[in-house]
Length: 389
Image 1 (cartoon, helix red, strand yellow):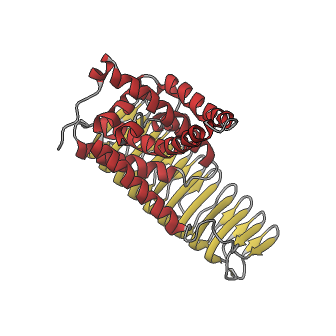
Image 2: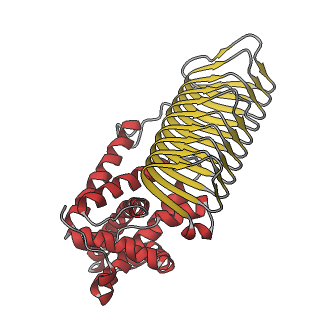
Image 3: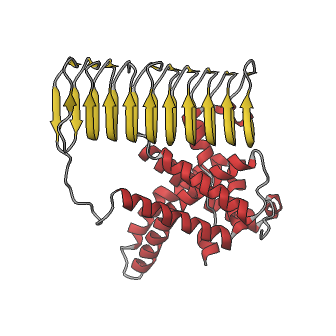
């Protein structure tokens, strides 16, 4: 039964990432992986760069966008484009001409950034040597801002210390907010906190300072705060893992079918996503059709839910497959865990929640239909064999 429900899982992430991070040439990008990846000083890469390794160091020049996933990531060279980095410890001390989007445990920004800085982590530190050309968006337990933010600041943190200038407004949610004597906010300061902000003598605020108390709305489901998100993440992780263990070939078929036919996946996904509710409503006109309509809506909901499993699986499959064979259940499980974690972190970035959800649903549901057809025809030979390891 699970095999039939699973049918087409997976595969949107690459298209989501390609749209967000880089245009069409990404399919010809430079892909590198291993225990350690180093772009040496003096090296010049005239392409988009995709890295997956335990340790990543970029000392050279990249004329393109960069996507990297690793334990430790250090950028000391120059990136003529944007970078998305996911890791444990991340340091950006070189130059990035466009946007920087990073998520990790410990993040240190000391370089020159031409665009926006979007950062999520435990401990985030912007040093005095950093240069932020546009906006700062952050979410962290502890945030120290020791450099000028050219435009505005929006973010939330447990403890936030603002020690330098802001060219526009500052909108901050924090348990504890400190505006140092060296701070200079040229626009308004709006902060949400249970506690009064510490605004030191000498701090300059050009606009109006507004203190708002946190809203105390009850969640729709009790406990659906941070812990609720964690529980949902773990539930989906377990669900995807079970599907891979029971039907590994179908999981691989989804990734393979979407990679080869992305437009067909998008088309079928759009048809199913928008036509199913209409068809279900029409069946409600007759008494006999009510059960059919209800079953259709239930399967519709299951399909939308499983589409995120599909996206996570493909993203991990794509990253790991760039430097290693994905030919066993164990590797497939690791690929899914990596990809779904990345997808979850991407959902934390402001303003892309709904577009990312829609893209996930469209490509995921479309992949389900296409992969079923693939397995029923001779095309199934194109699907790599998965061992029981």
